[in-house]
Length: 416
Image: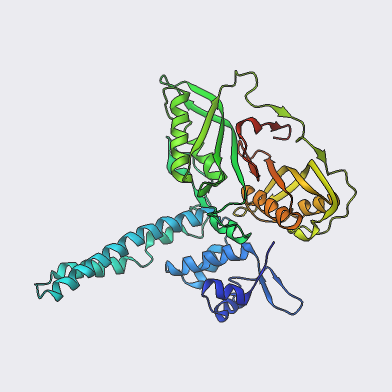
């Protein structure tokens, strides 16, 4: 996991070093580590907490209140971000309206016309209500039974596409040296959903599987829990047939991802909806007798030998943590390449070093691709991650120097 010094955080965010030191002193933002020289070192999780601190402060909360909110056992970053996004959008709309009114009044004064002072009163009203209000404060009540952050996720009574939560890909790609406008790979993200259900015209439940595939060039990715909650909203909604369900899913996802989506709704009666295999194709790295002690991503383990090869390797030992919830993500990863032979012991230790790393599935696979390309410089490279199921969903990101047809590659592993 990459760490940042306090000076770097100050330069990137515009916050003063003194403010960051003060946040540490009062226990609001403690750095993940300190160097041997005593320098504060901030992790990605620290940066997420800092974003929460700054946003809540902007919304009107005191530092004491912010610390109390963030230290609640039931606090969830994702839920908080959704609340903040909703409030910021509403405030942006109101501020834009106030700016329009100010421009209008200025033009009246400049033209020597009679000023409509009701417009001035509207501006004052907008700016006064811009401050934190009780409705927002209630969303962050410290009592679990009162806080939206502490509630278990409620199912929607009917179909609700607003459950989908899109996350921009650009920031994480830039972090690992990828130009979002010129990707170094082709690929796709493939979701399999095993708990799809809706009601037919007569109210009878229908169950099925779903396969969802979209290109890695989409501007956004979809957060997995939001996708689960979105599918849950179908449970008590009537649809004419599976085609209508398919079209709804394709439209909703495409709108939020910023790209085309292919969906297949698969009946349980189909003999082989997706093929199942015991392990990925290739030679397994996991029997290598290596000593592992580093569990934060370490590309230095990657090296090559002076031998030209074309081979396919895989490991079932890939494990990282969700960037938002910190819950473990378990997966198998296949590495197919042509070029100088990659040292296998080093490659396995590199994959194991993701064990305590915090990123989304898609971001981990892209990081592996970039690190191998940078350090091993293969002529061709394909990285394929097959992750285990969570909440009825599994995700399978594929990144390659070569174009391919995604659907034929969706072969389910036995651990999925």
